[in-house]
Length: 185
Image 1 (cartoon, rainbow, N blue to C red):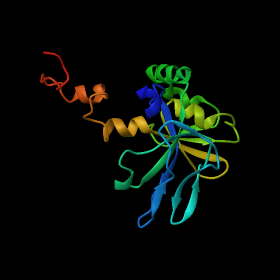
Image 2 (image 1 turned 60 degrees about the horizontal axis):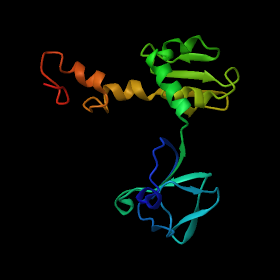
Image 3 (image 1 turned 45 degrees about the vertical axis):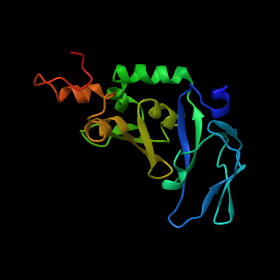
Image 4 (image 1 turned 180 degrees about the vertical axis):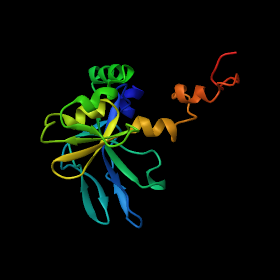
């Protein structure tokens, strides 16, 4: 019963759209929405400074718990099929990113191998989706080129060094014989 009312889901979702509340903006969601509710493109979700805020795309809505305390209005999310999660895990486990520059139209920007350029005239189909599976995010340079940055390369070194789920990075800090907090005694 609670699952139905709360809209809770066991699926894994990707955020593909975020409504940012600007400083000084008067924003309020229309009543009646619940997290993970299906929404349609163009459907009115909120009001901002007296103007309708419509869903940018079809998907599901996800609203921050403390909406009034930050600048996140709402997110549009979509479910990621389990097949693609397994494929992503397998490709990352075998370090498929090491051979990406062998693909036509794909080149490393530097020796750090954390950023690629992709020529869209050569690599035409499902480029963003394919690189997304490998942990890359894109930035368009122009109509012919994308820059693909590895989120994992950046996050391993800076943002997630001390979190438990990033055990490889975290455990390496305890190589001197000390036990990390999550290790069994």
